[in-house]
Length: 169
Image (cartoon, rainbow, N blue to C red; front, side):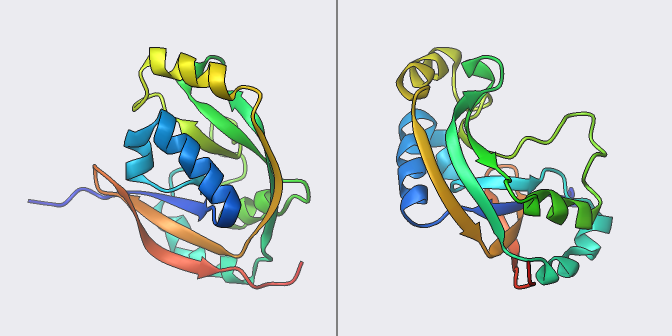
């Protein structure tokens, strides 16, 4: 039997105090997704074989500097609640462009940190989370030097490969 190809994404995991704050919220409001993957923001949603073959070029890319902002939802809380990720200097867009994922998708790319996911958070729970979290803001600048290629095995996301960003800005 042929093993199906795992879903792959390019992701930046959060660390430090920002991660601790976000993980507390995720465990409270969406423990299922919190168990499947740590707090992160996605750089590329579906990493294909061509992009995976080019992944090492990202090592020359400068570190990402982003700002984790306030809470938003995708139209309504049951569709997902997230924290904004602001790409003030364009480094995140530049990194995506290096892999050729800039504008190919019909769905616009919105960098974000998921707090509740629609597959793992019932509507009533999402509504409660929105009431509790809608005014919450992190407002923290973070620097990302390590990014991960992650794979989904049908149950959990795991890191398959890590890249250290060390190019000059």
